[in-house]
Length: 268
Image (cartoon, rainbow, N blue to C red; front, side):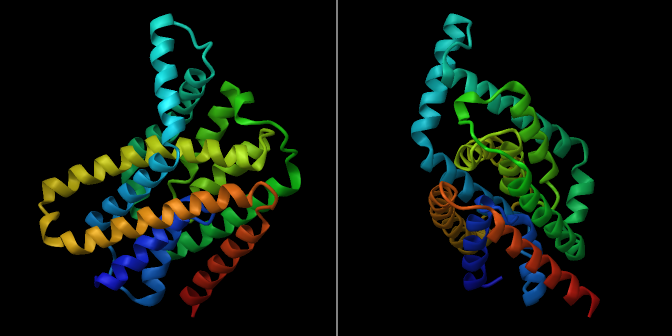
């Protein structure tokens, strides 16, 4: 993979990780459509770390408040602190995805070698985004989240391990379905993404170190990491502002169009 390809795929990963259009679907379909070489495990690990740094950097004040609240909760043995309670909700929401990824790791890895499946799942994402706009009545903020809300959003995140199923799209749609405002659902989605992306990145990095591939691919990996970091920061900022006043319909239309394009190319 050339440096230009590494940069473009890094930018693509960083942007689509947080926009509700499926980063995994793009990383499967785009190299396939353009006939580029597959990025590989090392590259995938580093661009995911780029998105982790982006979301932690953007929300660093909130994460500092969450950890401080958790420390107070441990000392007082109470979840009365709203930050401690939100962190507990994030932990609960992380469990379904972590458990499903661990139990069905081989199945999910095999799906990443099937561009047609990724295209089909993009159509599913388009349908979910459309239904969330048509059927939900968002009115609550993050402070009103319940344990049931966190579990439902966590189950939606677990479904997004499949390529083409957007993690941010599914979690935002689930949050809206539970009555959260679009921006509040997106904020919870981004905070919820941190442990799951960090955990996946740690596992990939461990496999990478064991394979001894890090030094040989350093320039390509560094370019991809920086691309994902910069694009991730921009896309988080853009989406939070966008969802204050606008709907998910454009993202649904985009996912539907890309999914149909992938299926058409496969059939032809």
